[in-house]
Amino acid sequence: MTDAMERRVTEGWSRFADKVVRAGRHDSLPERGQFINAPVARGSTVIFPSLAAMHAQGHRTYDHEVIYGAMGNPNQHLLERLIAEIEGGSDCQAVCSGLTACALPLLAFTEAGSHVLMSDAIYGPTRRFAKTMLRRFGVETSFYPPMASKETLQSLMRPETRIIVAESPGSHSFEVQDVPMIADVAAAGQAKLIVDNTWGLGIFQPFAHGAHISVQALTKYAGGHSDIILGAVTVNAREDWVKLRDAAIQLGLCANPDESWLTLRGLRTLTVRLEKQALTAYRMARWLQSCAPVARVLHPALEDCPGHDNWLRDFSGAGCLFGVALRPEITDAAMRAMIDRLKIFSIGASWGGYESLVMPTSGGIVRDHTHHHQPGPAFRLQIGLEDPETLKEDLATAMAVLQ
Image 1 (cartoon, rainbow, N blue to C red):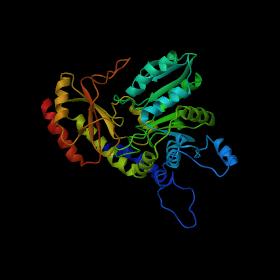
Image 2 (spheres, helix red, strand yellow; image 1 turned 90 degrees about the horizontal axis):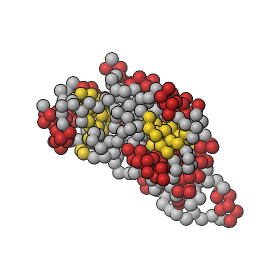
Image 3 (tube, rainbow, N blue to C red; image 1 turned 135 degrees about the vertical axis):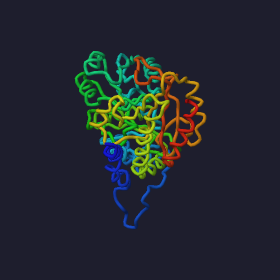
Image 4 (tube, rainbow, N blue to C red; image 1 turned 45 degrees about the vertical axis):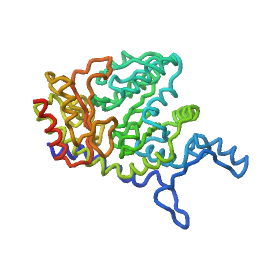
């Protein structure tokens, strides 16, 4: 069973290797040839041979054309084509950060008086944006338990609900939601379903499971080297693209050409990086289950992780980020002392890069509903490309302080 699950954890990454290698490149070769990678194209002003040409180009706002620097650049447009293909969507808008990607569709698809129904396990800054900025604009947000039944979710819908927001697996708590069920509820209520698909890039197809909008923090897997901040919003319907693109233009949102270029480069090796990192992460998660201080490991590929059956049904692989909950008698101070003893794991935010990271996830996370699967203090691990035995030894040595 273990060997079969290891294959299950990694198999999805190779399925879209051709896309990340071939898509998002020049469509045709000139007679004299060209480099494989497009050059970095920095610029603000675009010049035209005539007013008629300028006018014609100005009417192609929704076609990923170069019109003005603040509306996008050639590197951004190549990146957008690649992300749309990976996500299975029609169009993508790249923006300056993952949080911007979360905020943009909330602004584009709501108005004063709208209601947003959001997963309680959503990324913390998205929650803050909804409860502050959106609230000031007259949009109300309420939160549903991430593992809510269809009946519970239906009971929380209102006539003015315009959007349901899901993140699967949940931020810090790693519940894998029943996205097709949530999509059914959204459709019945004539609401849009937004899925934060950062953990599932390439191994979860949001539009095939009923999502209308998919959000990515490209900072994570796509960039892959902890040196860029970028985000993307992908849609699969023309009417949604027009609304989203119009909002992005009005807000002046675009992606830096240098960071777009670096993200394109990072994506070319994504599948080989993540295949190794996902396997190491799964093996580390199974090993941690046997460690005395550990009460529960929150990895979607483990049977006791909330929503494991949803992961089996909907995902073609697993990521490299998971959570660890310690026994309830272990204090938060003891956990922090353990984290400070780690030598190979660095303490730092973000994830999805080539290096291993650790961050505490208990104490400071806001929830409207009780999450019962974290009995004691908890932390998350981002597993990088280091030697697995070295990582295991580092954790074992640090956890000795908890005995």
